[in-house]
Every structure is written in structure tokens, then in C-alpha cells.
Length: 165
Image (cartoon, rainbow, N blue to C red; front, side, top):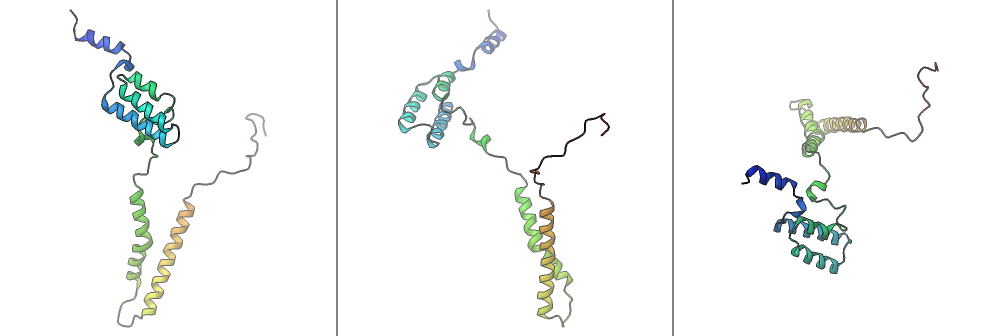
């Protein structure tokens, strides 16, 4: 009499290509074939023929035969193929806007001398000076934080350890 452990060991010894493919697996393979068609790897007739083979395939091994030559370098999951984006990108953009627009305005309001004798020229002049100072500081920070360019020249020769040079 065989127990549950015997079934597990028999299943582990079996090749995954012998497993039956689901409808979702077939649709995923068809999506890969359509991507290959869009990229010009397949003609329309080849696409139609391979889609027919996909629907006739019952196992993973049969599906792999249909797509072996065409989709060798297409990623199986297009979501993973996308380049990774910085998760803080929106926050960084928001901080740049705040630094470039709002913060200088707040500083200008705080620096403007109060009272009934404040002229429009004083307000405009103060605003212009504060914004220019902030923008010059911002540009200098951006230039200073850029990664250095690799040098095109060769490095000077290094002396070997223990040679005394």
C-alpha cells in the first residue's frame, strides 16, 4: 500500500515539462508570441500557426517547443523587464518645486520690512534678490552633487610594492 510520502517522491522525480498547462499558461505564451510579432520576429502567418500549436499543446514541454526559438531573449514576465524607478522620485520632485518656488516666497515675506512706508519697488527688489539667491544655491547644489565623469586619460603607472620607488 502506498502512502502520501510515496506520491510526493514520485511527483518530485517527474519532470515539470510533463505537467499539464493551464489556459492562463497558454494565454501567457500567446502574449509572448504577440510581442515577438510586434518586434518583427514572426510574420503574421507564423504567428497564426504558432497560436494554433499553443492551443493544441497540453503540457509545458509542448508549449516550450512552440516558443523556443522565437522568445529566447524575451522576458517571461514583462513587469520584471521594466527598469526600476526610484520610489522616492515624486517626493524628490515635490521638494524641488518647494525649494524653487515656495521657500523663497516665504523667506521674502519674512524679510520684507513692514509698515505703511513699504513701496512696491522694495517688495519687487527683495523678491528678485531672494529668488536669485535661492536659484543660484540650487544650481550650485545640483552641479556639486553630479557624479564625476570618468577620465578619458590613462592613470599614471603605479610602482610595485617593495621596489622602493
